[in-house]
Amino acid sequence: MVISNTVFILICIVFSIVIVALIFRFALQNSKKLYGKGVKGKDYYTGALVKKDSLGDNLRKLFTGKSLDDNDLLKLEEVLLSSDIGPQISSTLITKLRLKGLNTIENAIEFLKKELHDIICDKEYILKDGVLNIVLVLGVNGVGKTTSIGKLANFHLKKGKTVLLAAADTFRAAATEQLTRWAKVMDIPIVKQGEGADPASIVYDAVDSAKSKGVDLLIIDTAGRLQNKKHLMDELKKMYKIIETKGGCDTHNLLVIDATTGQNAFHQAHVFNEVVGVNMIMMTKYDALSKGGIVFNISKKLNIPFTFIGKGEKIEDIEVFNREKFIERIFN
Ligand SMILES: Nc1nc2c(ncn2[C@@H]2O[C@H](COP(=O)(O)OP(=O)(O)O)[C@@H](O)[C@H]2O)c(=O)[nH]1
Ligand SMILES: [Mg+2]
Image 1 (cartoon, rainbow, N blue to C red):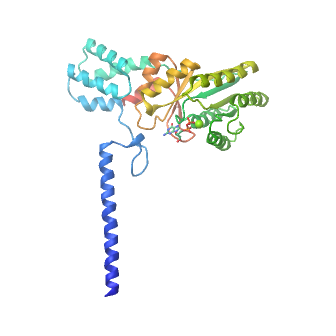
Image 2: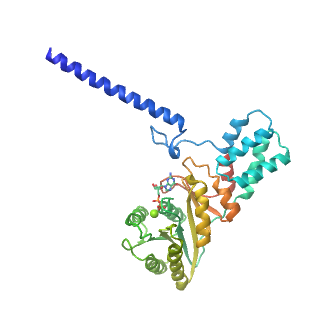
């Protein structure tokens, strides 16, 4: 009798655990319905990245088989805005569409593709011979600078180039450790000092080292603290001065922006460009649920070319930015 009581209690406990687990799963499922595919496109259960709806998908869903009237054009403008295309560009496009009198969604999509294609500013980054090519990697914390440096280095190594890394983000010790791991994975040299070291002195050592080794490309990680423009400018100016004094270098300022941050990325591009001048942009996290529409605003208003796309956390998740491909991707 005592045993059967114990068994009964055990059964009750197991039963309660199963009920709680079912309730928990049901709640998760509901939140998944509410929030679509989850933060940054990760599936709640498997953690795998899911395909995002393209701009084209969203437009076709809204207007299948109908001809477009004025009301539809307003809805179309909302879809453009929700894709981070920005109010000015969206409203100009709608005005043009209205004037053109295009009356089917497929015609409108073809028109938008062409217009948006022409806005994008892109440029390939080609290493020069006979000089030390330097890429100074800028951007606020967390956008993916250090990860992108690993990808960029690997990209050029695969093309037969030699690469040296410089850990000039001395603000946090973790940044140097992270870059050191990348250097180890690729078996390439890295110039670094301890946390809090003067970034300019690292750049000094790195340029010397790159020249004595005769490497093709030196990639420099920076801290990029946007909160203090004056400090950022002073820190970077010191670096430029050193590079200039050493001579024989072709230097590019690469700004890294996170595609999932929408108009915030525009603000960062604006400020970095104003403070130090930006020659090229790498847009990271394009694998996540970002719409990527920020490319248009930055291209149109700041005229800074997009050069690379980051599309995952692995070293090979990098792509050369190409506007034809980009347009196809956001519409298909
Ligand atoms: N999904 C995804 N994550 C990325 C990408 N690039 C970087 N990350 C992640 O973003 C986080 C911040 O990256 P990190 O390189 O440390 O940024 P930093 O502070 O700018 O140097 C890390 O968890 C990276 O794995 C990307 O293209 N896609
Ligand atoms: Mg970093």
